[in-house]
Length: 403
Image (tube, rainbow, N blue to C red; front, side):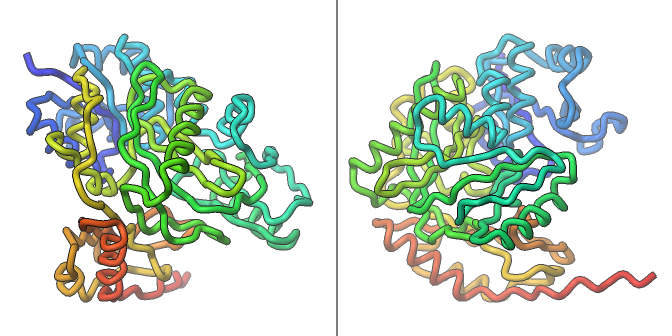
């Protein structure tokens, strides 16, 4: 019998096809559970089990999944799917992160509380309850929705006027009944870490430099480059802080994507999510003899020992193409010139003609992704910047609705 892995993901997510490709290569039976309509009978022909991601799975949902098993492991893409996967894993008796740990990792206030209790560097922070508005007295500070990801809704304020404007702007996105987090701004360089957890022990797969400064007022991520160019002692400090963050949250078994800042006072953990890196960004990671990240995660979920996995030789970099202005996307020019840039591997324009685009902090998407591989990190980063310079995007204003 094929090894079988339960995969919880949105049908519209970029990584679904990536995981299906990996499953075919590894001869793994990938059973998809997704947030499609429960009434329609298999509308996409993928035999997916329907789940409502906004609700705790009911007994009948668990029974439907159990009938598709038994499962060697569980995987998920996205914060809410990761929680649903963790809950299902507990009910099905499959190893994964505890659902309480994934829930805490997906809540910025709970994350801060757990990091502080564990003795990690934590900025001064405060929970703003629904309907509560307080004059933040320490500036600069950052306001955040508790459960949004990818920097959506994250705004820096340098004055009381900016604080109140940011608060009002975020509450338009979250609604009036959601709490917000206000915390001191952390200066420094930002990094990301991709890893796997085995019985609570972190296995670091890659540390990414983020060479573009992220100082606000919004925090749009662009370039990730690995391996890191930081000194060995800084990388060790990042790994140590990430391990402590994993332990503080209670993450036990499965992928972890962590974000952190580093300054003269040390490492400041921003998050440690019980899921892999999102979107097409995972394509940037390639491992000697182990393929891409999805292959590695599937092997791990299926019970294989992947502790010897090593990042492929050379530097690997991705740019999440930022949206320069809000509006309706029509086309991208200069794609072939970008692809012809030295050390470029691929150019993926994911925006669709007619798609309405939003910039940060309201937006939650990118125009596409650029990938480069080179002998050294500086070359890979340069390739991305040169390729991006060739791209031109036609984005037209959204026409107002006339009533």
